[in-house]
Length: 612
Image 1: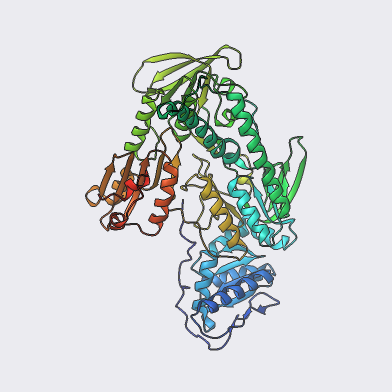
Image 2: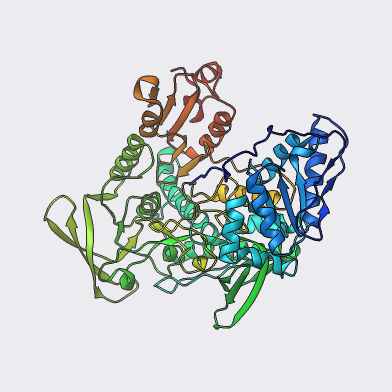
């Protein structure tokens, strides 16, 4: 959830600055003994980008070398309260009175870019942005302010990242490049079936990478069958060897795991294979697989713990069912499989398992691909049905019972209708649960330092600079509330976060119009709004929706301004096509620009360039 910057009531806004003095930028006298002035020598009035960057550098320098900095206005009562608080604590501060310097408004503008806070007072303690008046008093009442003042610069690390997935590693490596002392804590709690993996997170080990490789393996099998129609002659029957495939995939993943560890080592990032848990402000406990505990401190923390598959909470689910955590390293062919769920994970797994020639059934509680365009989702399901995947609609499992042990064994599943009293049962070799994922935020001690989470989802609300409600704690990746759960998003946000934290950039992650692809047998790529969401935002009468059916399905939603606000494609190589259209949408793609673009023939992508 995006939140507005902290606001302080009363006067103190940029521009309300009586009693301006001409001359150099400098601080007013500090109220707390022994007071001193904050000085920022100014190059003189200038609106150039060079002068702005120089001012930003001087502000960061002041923050870097000061124990406490208060950006204030002399007539602001909230600023006075904060200065009196530090005075009562006997803490020496640097105070910059923005109403008493000639370019105070420009200072406040640049400060707003750095902190995402537009009001005064604006307080930093030992390089940590505490916030405004209310946040400072809250920190004082909770003991956090005292902790910040006591620790000074005596932390073990500048930055500790909890979680070694895509976002965490991206942030760690960028911070190290910027010269900071960084640690990554990563520990995989084994699944109920005992599966664990190496450094790199979900995407590399049990997500995008093995999923795409298995998807490709299934497509190769289909291509072999289709090749006969194009003159290829061979005598052997085409069949798939599960063990050969999984061995090759796991070998590839192991090489990636090693590559990540090597990259951290080359950048002098400390990697600790232990479970991280906050025990107090700025301090975590790291527990390794032997139960040995070590404690570390840091000035700032990034939470990048990701998510794990959800279970049904019924008899036999954790005992006998598997999830995507287990599937990609399963040492035996799963055989006849029931996939429970209609998420993209469920449909992707069902698709490639069917592509290997297995008997696959998908049990659907309500709709396919919730959150995606529903017309396209139904087309995905229809294509899968035509190619051998069976669907049980409006049913949910209520019990899983083991009939026979084995590799695979036999399981009986009892399910009930979501619309009545009807029950059904079936026998399968494997039951794969893909009903959603839960954020790994509830058992890492966040409550001990006051970090707020969404109690229902476990996700962490942050502002537009990925900062939690605790000033020195940030979060990236799938655990963020109301942000896309995608690897490239985590990588980008982690990198930009490190750059902002350590002064290299002010750029924020853009979460709008992020493209994605569902790797079902016929791929589904999309960028922007679904038709349902576009109608909700813009109203149906303000939209044009066009559907192509040549080669494959391609749908555009265009609002009244002629701008393309949604792109959806169902067909071969949908991910490759979507990437190009996503870049165009970032640049403000319009219907007219599409009409004016000549396509490459014969390609799938040219359909998007045909006139509406």
